[in-house]
Structure formats: C-alpha cells, structure tokens
Length: 215
Image 1 (spheres, rainbow, N blue to C red):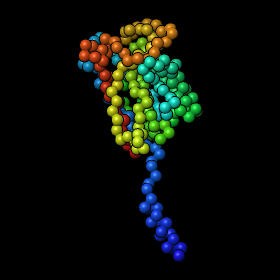
Image 2: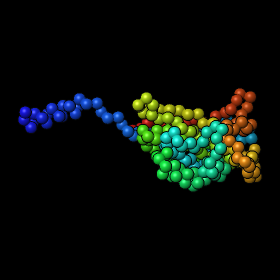
Image 3: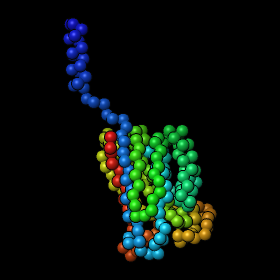
Image 4: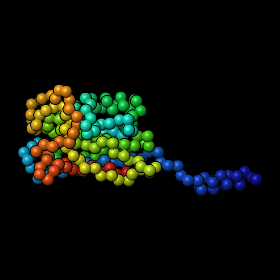
C-alpha cells in the first residue's frame, strides 16, 4: 500500500470519527433588575440599587449561598456593604483547592436596570453562582446558586432564573438604613420575608437572570 493511499485512508477515518465533546463553553449572564417603586411600592427607597456583582463557576464542593446555610465572611461583606474583596479571597482559596474555576464580576447599577457578564465554563466546574447586594440594606442580597450548565453530556443553551431577595442572617436591621446591628450568633441565610418584598400575594421577585451560551 502506497504512502499516498495510507494518507487518504487516515484522512477518511478522521472525517468519519465522531467529534470530541467540547470541554468548555462560553456564556453570557444578563441580569434584568425590574425592582422599582412600581413593583415594590412599600416604602421603596429612592436611592435603591444593586452593588457590584461577583460570580464564579465551580463544582459541587463549593457553595456561595444556600437556604439554611450560614453565610461566609465574604458573603456577609457583600450583603452588608457591597464589598467583594473578602469574597474574592474566599473564591481564590476555593480555586486553589480545585473547587472553583472562573471568577467574574459586573459593575453595580441603579434599579430598574441591567447588568451583564461573560465567563467560560469547564465540564469539571459546570455550576455557576453569583450575588449582588440590595443597597442600601442591613444584609440583603440577590443572586443565584449552583445553576447547572452541563447536563446529560451536553451544554445547556439557555437557562432563566428568578431573582429573589435573600437575607444573609448577619445583621438584625429591618429597614433600609438601620444602624448596624450585628446578629450574634449568625443566623442562617434565608429568603427575605420583609414587607418591602412580601405582600398578601407572596414573595415578589426582583427580576430575572438569563444565562445564554454564546460559544
């Protein structure tokens, strides 16, 4: 068999072989914050806004927040003051331990408004979480935790998440500009059933987050 024939056979086999699964995918996160005086009229604060957002892709061994779980110092700092430095340090530590991969952020916005971020996801770290402070507030925030982007061997093309108000359980204040009242010991993170966000129809969402695959 000639060298040319061998080359042609190899090329044909390469074309016939199934393509390797894509190990990474790029996504865009679009946050549509509908929170406003119209949607949440009870004592709506005129200067209400969302702080800078911090997010990450990770595996099941990392948790940014969860109902019934005590907030980390990083989440406390974000929820109480809109600061992300401590949370970034926690994420970098989780990255060193192999629990987290990409870290991303977006600038804060006035509400209603929108923010966007892009990030790359790997199969090993195919969950995404993010959080942003409801400001001004004692320790209230919104976001999403452990949203799966890889399922049944394939990348998810699009997912939409409702944004609910959360209480980090680290400050006992009950109004927008209440004095600092540190909760000791810390209570668990939970959905915020405050009159600002809850009425006879139930808990009112702050908007939606849409995660779309772009590559």
